Length: 145
Image (cartoon, rainbow, N blue to C red; front, side, top):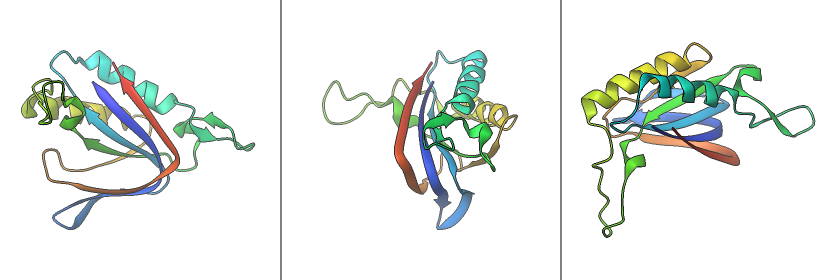
């Protein structure tokens, strides 16, 4: 499981020119799965994400988690291309990415687990999505389990 975590000032996801997910300040998460991923890994990474101390405290130091924000929000986007492999040329291979049906189950579980801690908006699994956001910092963290 791979998650690209980006601190955001605001973000939205559009499908067919319609906004399907939108947050103000919070985290944008791009989430991908592979065949060896487990429910335990999903739960672990959710806890890791909500406890990352990447928000500024009163002294301007990244020392707070999203749980300490006034309105903790996440925009979660399924992203099988996180498992792109370009070792054999310029055309990425996605054979390491989990198949759609199984990935959707884990993605739904991931969002369900995150909702125990924060408000979660999503895109539409498998859709052609356009993501607009302002990266705050910029702060970008790569998590893998």
